[in-house]
Length: 209
Image 1 (tube, rainbow, N blue to C red):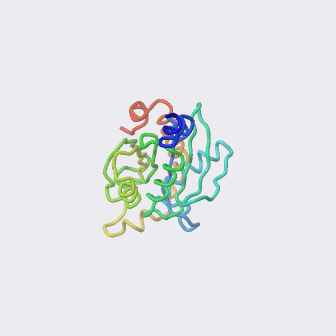
Image 2 (image 1 turned 90 degrees about the vertical axis):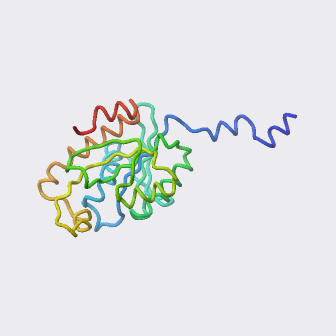
Image 3 (image 1 turned 90 degrees about the horizontal axis):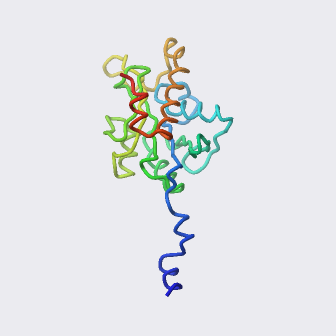
């Protein structure tokens, strides 16, 4: 009988291998690959995870659909991901790395620019609509849910009608650039709070009023 159970369902050790690890998180910064997009508003997600990796003296390595590295913080494992699919296909990388590392959706965090928020504002949410953001739309489509956490980094909307694309893909202004380091550090703090004290407390502590 035991042999039949093992053949049908696998051993207890094999099942243990496929259990989701509550201490493992997938932190995905959204952006576009290529040097021409460096330092643009749309790449703030890349900037946050880049700064996280740098602070831990870890380097990203190119892998399937993304540049990836792993850091540790207070007993948690954080897998940092920068999709190399371009923004509009970010969901392919998110789904692949969630599956590969068996990360539950509650432990996924997408870091994304948001032009509906003033520059420097932060909003951590556990669910929501894509609000016209193509990266979030693709993630929602491929995960088949909008019930996943996201960290919105405000980039403002100081552009004339019809100039949205140029603004989003444009470089930071001198004033924005001077405040960018502090903005990114607040984003990093929010990520670490999300992984340690939970989404509710992290939202209370970090979301801009």
